[in-house]
Image (cartoon, rainbow, N blue to C red; front, side, top):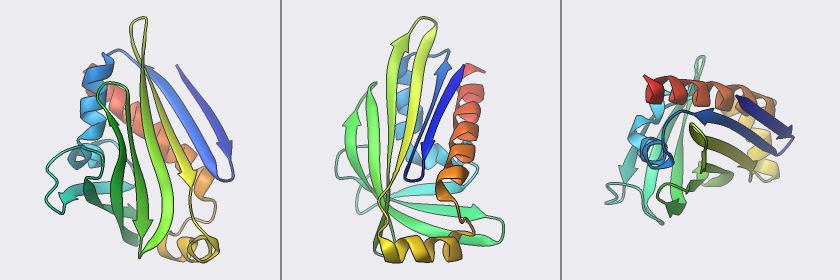
Length: 158
């Protein structure tokens, strides 16, 4: 079961996965594994001495869409094991987005809620499509977030 909501500057996708919240949180908060389920983020690596999830920990992301590729600088903003994991994203020094994952126990597993909030200002909004090849970022994220949670469920439930 999955549900979605989209506005021009925010997307929310949720899915029930037949695993406990602690296990799913551990998978998502290990950002070095995000390339296993994200169709756009190909890899992430902890930087600046960080070795795992903690508020203030930083990581670098590498993203691709077709022939376009770009990197991001991310900072963990919320780190509550089994409950919530969130981070802010910058690219080329510009604020880009806030991402969050929430984990709610439900009968038979966990509801995973992934949200994206657009933090881009005017310049980053204008440059974004040139760098990423995506004109409608909310529509693209709705598509990729749905696929991410499908892949996460397949990996976790196998």
